[in-house]
Image 1 (tube, rainbow, N blue to C red):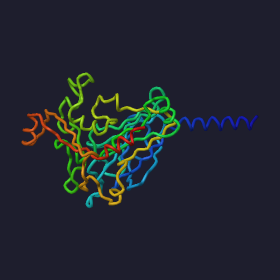
Image 2: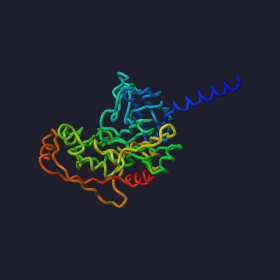
Image 3: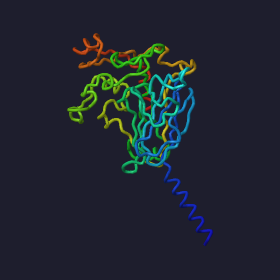
Image 4: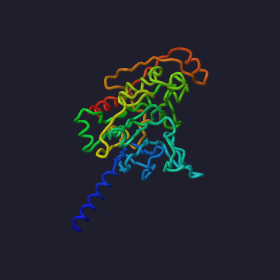
Length: 323
């Protein structure tokens, strides 16, 4: 009887441990340069064991998330510690902590974000990749495990999502962020760049019936159809998997050619040709941009033509996200 009681107690303890497990994030760097992932827990969520670290090219690191965790992950680029003060800072995605650990700081815009709510409504994990706050890195989230297989087989929205395209060089001029020595390193959202209510889905545009896709958000959506491109892009951009039995791989720069990886260079600064596989150009029309320089102000008074060559990584994106 005593032995049976011990076995029952052990089984109960194991069940509790299993129930407490929510997911493991495997964060992988496919870029040809170091990326510093940042991790932020939402208010009320238990903290993760780390909030930031360096990830060398080709390196991966697993981070266990507790049950019910909610928060976001992103990549920081072009990071270094100041020689005089020792303060750590990044050109993109900086979290303002002054150190490698973000310690509760969020990503400075623009940054590509992976957002998660684990064990949410209906016993599901909810996740997405968002370009609403802009873009700095290609990133794809891929679910795995028995929960992913079961959800996919039943016709649910448990599938890879993200943005595998390298968009910085193709970014419209009014949104582009350039670093003096590195060229284009990020692409701002129209809300961040111009502050207009129609782009921010605020004020009279603060609902899905009045806030519609803009020429700027369509630039992101055309290249990355499964990623959030503006605030009310839920229908095509939110994914769900069975909670407690699904893990997630977050990959920066998926599908980067080996020749780029081997150089150790930041492809954002390497002058790589930016074109689609068939060499065609994607054209978008827009207007109502509100910028501060005289040239930009003049441009903002009229409709403009943004002719961008979206990278061959768009084709890679379609292959990676076809599951």
